[in-house]
Image 1: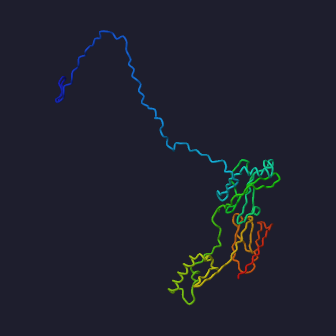
Image 2: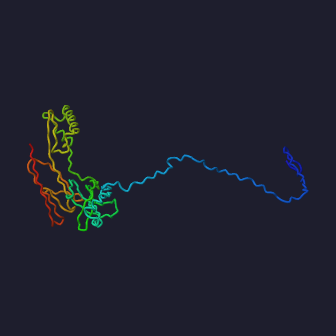
Image 3: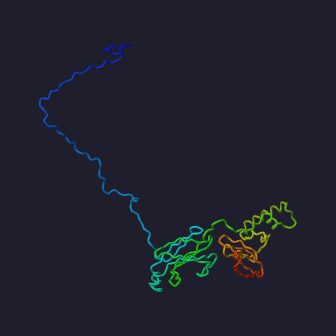
Length: 319
């Protein structure tokens, strides 16, 4: 289809033609333009007074007191080779020290932490395996302590060391034990086998394959394993026989020899070499028979130049 000028296409509305422009005449000139100001609108409202504030927004700050007025020292374990101690010295204690030693002596003395190794000892203040001193600053109230040996028991004395070397004890800590730094070195345990239990409880006249024997062994095995009264089941040489009936009693005696020396030394007990742990400590367990037992313990330096001997005599009489 061909569209010609001035003719609309079929089905379309005709386009409107151009409109006439009307001219408006103003009779008087406008002398001044007036600006109309609109009032300012405030959309932000002030919060109402007396609104309740939640409790979690309130100030709840609380400071711990610097002390509790008690003279004490507390020792705790950090790891096998480090301890931590914290302490407090009450004002009354300082006054007492000044009255005994004099204010000038207390001021001139050095505050000391004296660390004691008291493993397996009833400590009386003088019989530790070894001890060492750590000078601490005047205003310190806690200290980290490095110890040389793991798996040992320690306590710490807090005191004053005067210029002449004398030590005045202020307070003593609790006892702590450091953990091992490796696996246990106890290798002398001997566990009874099932065959050993069967030999111990096998009655005379019956073969090991009879049903009655198998049932009886099972019952006695449960008794041996579950009885709290039988404690030597772990040693083949000292297994307790289950009493078939009646009241019975059996007792054994063991002793444990333990000590410490230079880790490079060679140690013998009753002439038998003893294996030392890395820290130089050792422990050996003996069965103690009736009679008198002489137990010489000898430590020889690695170069053989020095020898130390301790001899212990123990007697046992069983009635």
